[in-house]
Image (cartoon, rainbow, N blue to C red; front, side, top):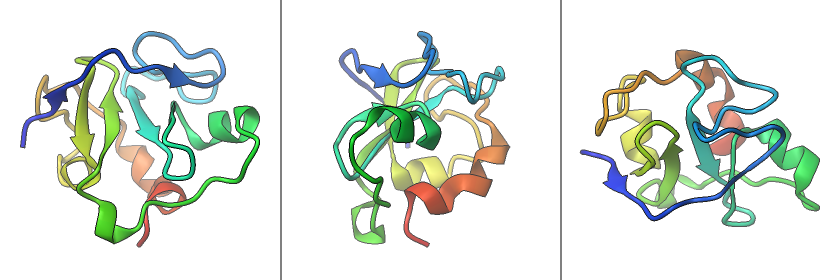
Length: 112
């Protein structure tokens, strides 16, 4: 499924640029932001959330994986969690490459 164009989304975090890269993750492929279940706010990464939010993060339950919670910093479209998890590390809309290493952190964001 293609990413849906979204109105301008503010991505919070430390040193976040227009492609959603932050002080913690800033390779050419670190271009997604995640809407956190706990607060409905997009952050560049879990560390950015920990530094800026006044509450602990919570993971998205499987029952809500259809929620548009992933933001592509390249085309500024959103993807559902399911679409993101099944996109083979490439934006379905603009074909920008996503960091495959992010899979190591899925448990911090999504229910297993």
